[in-house]
Length: 320
Image (cartoon, rainbow, N blue to C red; front, side, top):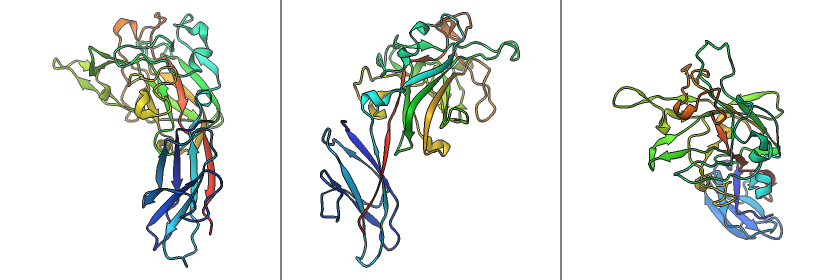
């Protein structure tokens, strides 16, 4: 396996110690602060070790910086990045699309199981499946008004430092303006067992044009919890789809839900005036080019891919 980054978390040492030193060693677990390479010193409780050697066993230990007679043994948690093959979901066991011939639905499930194939800031990828979106104009009689898909990663998505997984749609800037985007939002839920689900809180925060009309092109309109807001930069593994600073797409942190790991991710197209956000506000979906029309095979959230960021958790302790 090739790991470009390793994320570390540890418990703070008890007083009077205030700092820790994190030691890395390639051959065996470090036994003292001088046994290996010191990669971190400070009072934080997380650190990401960058640019690690490929295909090499890596061992870490955390040592408190305190008088030697203080018996402390802080726990060190190490999270590793997945390889490209491990990053993507292993299956899409169920889906429910609004249109019987939804765009590229004939390629399910494979089309959503690989790495993202983003087209950059100015164009949306066509390597997607359209979940569908419709307008609730009959008081819920024709529910649902958005399609959904379930992704199974089989192995856990761990809650490591920062974001834990990223979902990729085909958002693009209109005329190159980052404050004018073509967006088709979706709600995201996660589960450990596929039975009990936890949805990321949504905040629909309306923005308005100078004429008073609702502006559904401004990204701050979908200010929290939505997928389908940011363009996708990663294409076939480059830049790294597991690095949310480079990949584009919409990243999610399991800490927001108080979960340590999950296995399943469910993506639900919001539709128009159907779902409510956490403040009981109806969520709007743009209706340009039949984007919220049940009769359109290209309506609604267009799923490109999803990847997890932290795949393994390794527990270790410093030597007493």
